[in-house]
Length: 119
Length: 200
Image 1 (tube, rainbow over the protein chains, first blue to last red):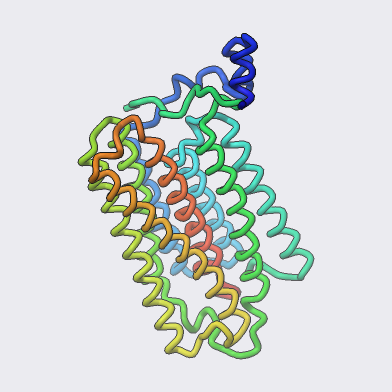
Image 2: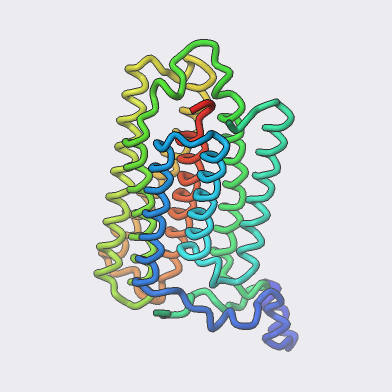
């Protein structure tokens, strides 16, 4: 018997059955095709700019900073819009952010401890 | 612009969310650790090779940029496939799924071409630390893309039998989550591995 079945059998109301469901989730909507195409266009433009500045010959520090910012922007756009974290239940976001932060911690510790470098 | 609500909201589970979607997000969270470790290993060892070829000797940025573009566009077609099935447009979903699989296939073909070129230029898995970490990282990513293509083609085949309807849009959404994750991993790899090179 699942937890939900148990609660249902014991007369728990719907709100108690769904402790992680947040107000507004039921009415959450996904964007339409036009919005997706617009996001796609923005991603293409950012990628083109990334490749463009790679050939500009600007200073290494500026290049790395710009590329990391552009990459993070693309990452965020895809996660929020295409993977719908902007519209879905917050629990999904927490799970993904936790995994991402753990990965970032391992990444940072490894680079720092073993004397690696990004540039 | 907004359309059909997410098919998964308000279910009778202990979380109120669809368990399959929850499991997919847990899987993707763990995949962050997997690829994070591989990328860290690459950055640690890429410039510790004692013999060439080195990254600047073999990388072809224009070619890889086209590959990155293909994978980025496949994310757009994937989300359009989901949008189509959520609106009940089965034919449109099938077309977008095929387009996504095709773009994924182009990406994997490009990667196979790149690996072959590197091999002929003397970079093997055991040539140096750069070769080892590069092939392991991008090889695992390519394997993920290949699995994604198989999932997409399976969805397409199942939909041809009429076994995917509007109410089953979660199946497409789960495949989409996996596919978009593979895309964001490439966004990171493209920048950290290809564009940001030591001393470029």
